[in-house]
Amino acid sequence: MIECDGKIVSSVQQFVIPVRDEQCKAVHIGAIANVSTLPDYRHRGYAAKLLAASATDMKAAGCAWSFLFTGIMPFYEKFGWRPIHRMFLAVNVPSGFSADGNSDVILQDPPDLERLRMLDEGSFVAPLSQIRGELDWKYKIPQRIQSKTVFMGEDSFAIARESDGSVYLEEWGMPEPSVIKFQHLVEAVANWAASQGTHRLVVSAPILAEARQGLETLFAQVDEVDVVDAMVRPLSSRWPMTRIISLFSLPAARFLRLDSF
Ligand SMILES: CC(C)(COP(=O)(O)OP(=O)(O)OC[C@H]1O[C@@H](n2cnc3c(N)ncnc32)[C@H](O)[C@@H]1OP(=O)(O)O)[C@@H](O)C(=O)NCCC(=O)NCCS
Image (tube, rainbow, N blue to C red; front, side, top):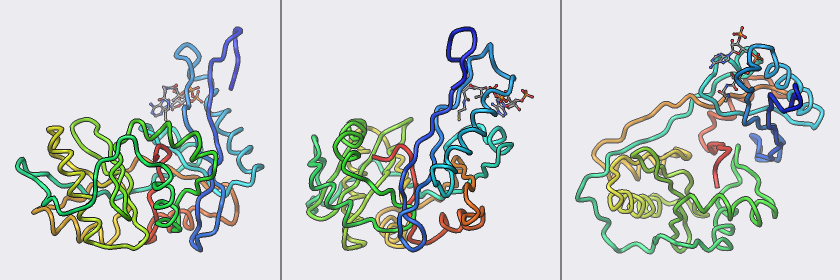
């Protein structure tokens, strides 16, 4: 941060998170968040200075590449971050939508975190999966999960969130991939969405073949939503931009979200 006139006038938050590379091995990446400068102190190069310092610091910490979400890409492009396109699937949930009731998937409140952990760890050893440690499960996840809705089946889970008239299916997993199980998760989330009076369901999670097939079976029309809100920047010569981008386009890659549960 930068102090001026006895107060903090500009700050950048950085943190290191472990994710998996193409071989599903751990690699550390540097996330950037909360970049801000007080209005009276803008256009003095403060944010630029802090972003440059962050990049140097993250390199020194052994980070392979950096990642951020933003609504002002041109600003970060000047400092070497480049946009990443991510494809989401969206459907309209019909008013009368109702699952057949044969599924074991239920909304869990409060969620059974032990079981969620077991299912999550059994489901994701794929590129870009965030590697969650003891501290994540002890502190971060219990706090974050409070703003989400958790659905669980016997051996599957889905995490959803309602925002701006849409329900986002943000995470889902199952140790044994199955189109039917995915359909049951979607049915439960879509039922819940409809009960909230929300009819737009966006799957902002990995779009694997099973996911697409499951959605196409359940809903007449599946739209593709191209979102370009994430940016990446190389921090190591072993991780040129082409390698980072190809990681995101691997079929089995997870979507990396800084705000995921
Ligand atoms: C974006 C922000 C952090 C820049 O802080 P700053 O200390 O003024 O940044 P710098 O002085 O290093 O760089 C300023 C340059 O950033 C660019 N910039 C600032 N806001 C921008 C925006 N919304 N879109 C694109 N470029 C922008 C301009 O090119 C500006 O150049 P100029 O000074 O020649 O006009 C500051 O405007 C801010 O706090 N905005 C509100 C919070 C925000 O949007 N944060 C980013 C969230 S991802």
